[in-house]
Length: 308
Image (tube, rainbow, N blue to C red; front, top):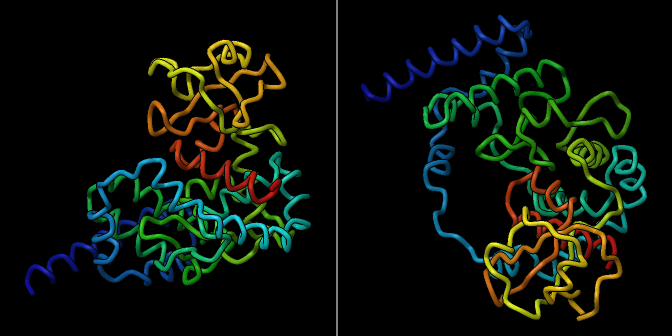
C-alpha cells in the first residue's frame, strides 16, 4: 500500500504540473480541471497494452488475408453507396478523392465502428507519467487539452485508443491540430461522430501531404525475371519504359499504357511473391502511417471499394 500511495502522490504532483503548464499557456482553468478529473491514477490497462505490444511480424500475405478479406470490400461498397454523395464533394474540396478516404477510414476504424474505448486524457496522462516516451506523450496531452479548450469536443467524449489516437480518423492530438477540418459547417471539427468532419479531416490530411486526385497509387504487376534486391523498394524509381525493359508487366501480362510515368517496385514478401508498381500517391498514404503494408492495404481497399 505504501508503494501504491507513493505512486498516487507522484501522479497527483505530475497532474498538478500539467495543470500549471496548461494554465501558463492560457487554457481555461475550468476546462483543464474538468479534463484532468478524468484521470486519478495511471491506467493499468493502458500500461499493459503499451508494454506488451506483439513482437511477431506478419508477412504481407498474412496481413493481406487478415486485413483485406472480401467481406471488408463488400461492407465498404455498401457503406460507400450510402455516403458517397456526402464524401465526394468534401474530398474534392480538400484536394483528395474518395479512394483514399474510404481506404483509410476502413483500416483506421472499420468505417467508424471502432474508435477506441479509452479516455484520451487518461491514456495520454498515464503514458506521459510512465516515462518510456514521456516527452512525446506529455506534448500530446498538452495538445489534447488545447483541443478541449477550443470546444470541439467535451473531455468526457474525447475517446480513442490506449495510445491516444482519436475518433474515426484515429488522429493523435498533434495531427488533429494540423489537419482536422469542419465538413458539415457547424464550426466544430468532430472526428468522433460527424461523418462529414471525418471525411474532411482525412481528405485535408492527404491533400496537405500532396495527394494527387484521381492519380493511381499503384497496381499489381508481374515480373518476368527475378529483380535484384537493389532494384526493389519504393525509393528506387524508374520510368515504366525502363521497367518494361526489365520484364515488368501489368497483372494481366499487358504492357503499361504509358511509358513516361515513374514508379517503383514493392515486393513485401521478397522474390517470387506478389509485386506492385507504386507511384507518388503510395508515398502520400505512408505519411498517414509509415508502413508499406498499410499503404498497400489502403490503396487496394480504396480502389476496390470506390472503383470495383
